[in-house]
Length: 178
Image (cartoon, rainbow, N blue to C red):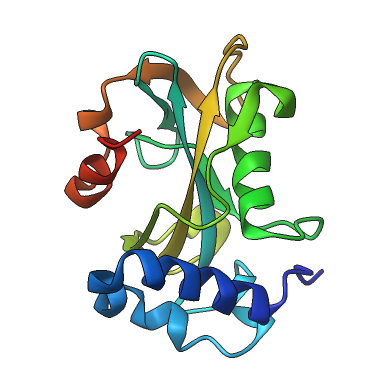
């Protein structure tokens, strides 16, 4: 079932992102080249759009999950689903699914992405997927309260960790102003 997010929504998000971070234009080339909603579907190769939530608590720690398949710590995020209507909404859904927080626990701090990252994903023969790229559109949220209750089927663990534990130096730098 196709994702209902329109390609125009992605282009609006990219324009807002590049207005704020024009130095990132070269990094978002694969997303700029997408011209149909097929770019949101998991089966689209050599890559497809994903959405992530960068969640900060009141003390400035970032919420990270331990990813089962990749055996690494990441921000909550993942593939788009048929019910997702916007990219920030998909990022929120992923954060809720993976950490057990409630949607009411999370406040979107900016409707424009704080970061976009294109990164390789190794082949997953169990799912019949070859190696591909994720075009990860990341949104910034604040969590004022809420108890972490990671979903075992999704992740190994969820923890508040220092921002420097994120996987990207540009993103860490951008978070210093929040």
